[in-house]
Amino acid sequence: VLVATTEQQQRILGYAVESVDATGAGDTFDGAFLAELASGRDPFVAARYANAAAALATTGYGAVAPMPTRSQVEAFLNHPNA
Image 1: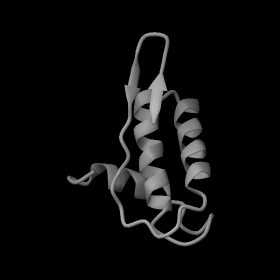
Image 2: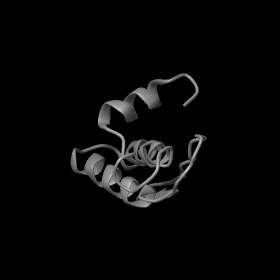
Image 3: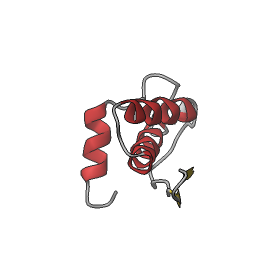
Image 4: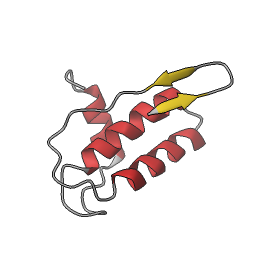
């Protein structure tokens, strides 16, 4: 993901997970990114969070069931391998 502001741009790398179905990953990214921005989060931090949420969403089947909760995303990001 490329995130750009008027001051800078950064390429935000994805996360390696055991993906089984990409259905809903884009929607998960969009929702997580916008929720983080709406809460005042820096856009680069928001993109990292959204990438993690989208990655986790690909670890299950379907568009809704595998969508992670905030606590699941935060636990994933706090894991040493993230």
